[in-house]
Amino acid sequence: MTRVYVSGPMTGYPDLNVSAFREAARRLRTVGASVVNPHELDHFGSTEWHEFMRTDIAALVGCDGVATLPGWQESRGAVLEVHIAHALGMAVEPIERWVE
Image (cartoon, rainbow, N blue to C red):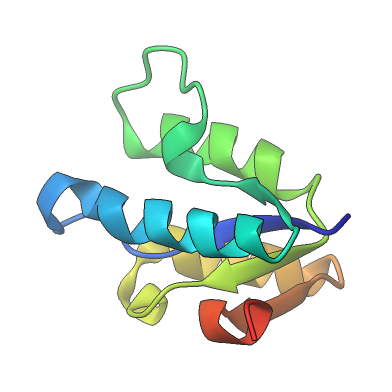
């Protein structure tokens, strides 16, 4: 089973874009992927961006690939996640490519 991390913009979006992340996770699960949705991770009371990113990156490195959401290029965190995924040789594709 492929383990896929969902990466996309949060900051500046209503409710941190949780609905887009949930929908992406739902779609990935319907095609049999094991999904890591950062909104579903336990961030252990984190309040700072770098604290959230440490938890998210730790989860990311255990995945096989990354599904990107629209607008990811404008997100500091998503750009970092995609950069790390590429550096680790992981597949990085828009969500639509993962659920075809």
